[in-house]
Image 1 (cartoon, rainbow, N blue to C red):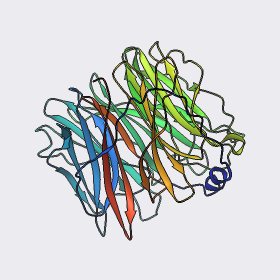
Image 2 (image 1 turned 45 degrees about the vertical axis):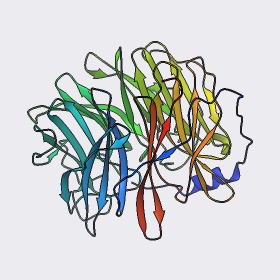
Image 3 (image 1 turned 90 degrees about the vertical axis):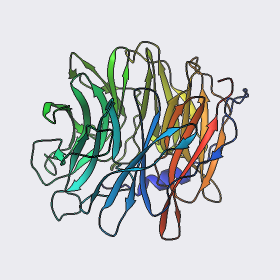
Length: 396
């Protein structure tokens, strides 16, 4: 989906001082991970029911790509498994496939497939495995509209009757705005409960969803008639998504999509949301915390105002708080940064994980067994390489 070039000017124009709070550093020095080589797109992280992380990525080909995945165990990436090689796979720096374990041997993968020759006509397709990812079913389109328009930016979560998907849907464009829709893919491969969630959303900002003790909760960037594009939140109650409401009113008025969606995580009653805004030409990364399953949230905590470009990641660190990652611009390039925030809203010091050449990248952050894991791509000449780091967490 389309990018908005003016965002770069907004971000570069702001150079506010960092607002680090003196605090004990919770995270240790990053440890580089051994990862697959080649020209790579993605990556994407999901979590297995047992808490282990699953990394998926695209091995880029002359036409399309191979979608692959592996589980992280004992601080290392396990043997890669291929889902599909699809010459019609739509490859994009911001709109990423994913692979998720449903239960036991049941897995589900999604990717984007061109539906017509037009550059921006593609569908969300899913494939199921019933043998732990060894073999996969023929792809099924997740939506039923049949239009040659844009569909993407998918978030998935486990549901009682299968896997639920939330995606941006362009079936009514260009005469109407992009919409947000959802559906469930059952264990038997049926589509159920397709629902319109919001009829006017930002064209190409990531969605995200988490499951709290009170049920699924999703976040996305809304779009009003006067082009205010703030983060909205919706909760699923009795199987139906409720009307979205503003998480926080940044009042970011922007005439195009910033390609910079929010991130949400949940742990029981605790929920956290992180996002980027450049309202008034001042870029900032914020996080908001909930102690009641996302029913209400506390005041926003400013994570960074030191030239952030956004592209946020988020992970709970047991019950001690969250870690937030983001990309920041520096005098010599770009920096991938990390900061912890306690559940009382107290931020820790800013930590640099890596210097990166690529600014437009969506790092993936997760927590497993006493360590944070961060994955991203970076450019090396014409190639895009998969990078990763394990960041130890103290006291675990």
